[in-house]
Length: 140
Image (tube, helix red, strand yellow):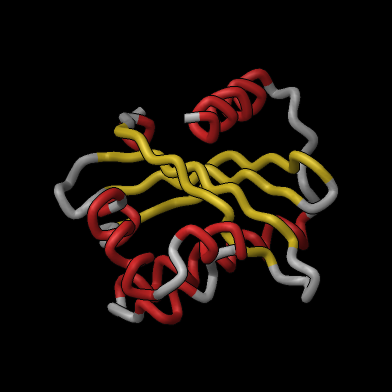
């Protein structure tokens, strides 16, 4: 619940335009991570998709099977998007990025996924969380 509240506060910052924008290289790297995970989901490659999860997610879901079970049961629009586009982005610290992704789910409905990513010691961005909600942002 605390993670959802934090995501809502961060989204409010995005909407208010108070966020510090991340550098272009950081944005590209974070988006590349998200896109690679989405492509792995679509290719039914759970191991590859799991590889883009940050250590905090892997601690909660210590196996590919547990991770994929969570995704299958709670994140179908992310698991099987018909299409997606990147929205607003925010740098929340020197190593943290929040990226909005607008999706059309397998049910044809529109969703907003807000990804949080952290820069890892190896220089890659990994996904620390995803907040998903129904949206009409694509139709406006």
